[in-house]
Length: 371
Image 1 (tube, rainbow, N blue to C red):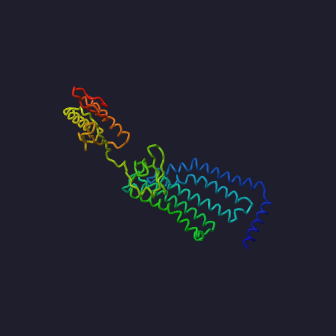
Image 2: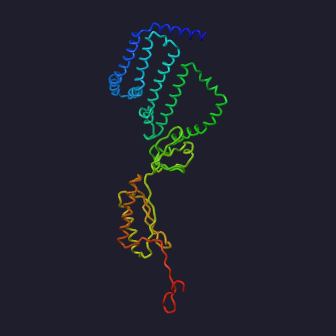
């Protein structure tokens, strides 16, 4: 029965081709060109006019929807123009279910395309929802939720198009049979990475732009996706870490520092007198407390050790800034001022060295090596 219907349709198509004339072709082409003109008119004038009016509204949702459907609407005019032009032709081609399903698929695809754009990073509807919560503006929850919904939109659009073609999804999934088990085993890592990303988003051990350090990577967080997190290292390379691995590692977030530590030990020569050492320690302490870039809490300058070749001076303080470049400036300035204080009092920095003392002979002369 189905073969007879198809054969009958082809017979009508051949009959229509026999009575085809160039006037019909010209009118059909004219219809298509008119819709192309509508597309250009809509893009240059009507769309921009409507968008300008909508942007004046207190709610920006409508303008975001229009922006999301800008490109799909351009293609809408082309598809409708093509369909109407083919409809005018004396061919029964547009009565074929195949052609009608193609156009239905295109329309569904355009609708899905617009919704997909609506959940993009530029017009993410979750931004307003997140702004009402305690999450910060740099939270990666916003782009993460946007990607989840974009994935759902793609799946729903594909399912809708398959339903248009009378393809049963349930039968298709059931038809996977034994292959489903193999697929689930192969997808274990993907699922683990996805839930690892959910853990990172919800627990918020770091945010986008933070400087983090883990046993496997150190750098600035650039992005997080379903599978992995991208970290830009200090050598300006991108390291992609699976979310399942990152969520199970100890993460040090250096960007959460309220101040940044500087500590080191100075090695002072044993030739330094007690008075000079006391004076230098006092001036170094006063200099650090007076420096505008040094945090006033926990400043320590202490004589701590008698070493093999030097006197050990422990210097410990924090900078107010946590930015690396500014931190280095404060460290350089304090180091130079410490050097100036030591030079002012004639105190030498000790270097690793050894002194060998030789016993004297009976005549008062020192023994030479090897005697």
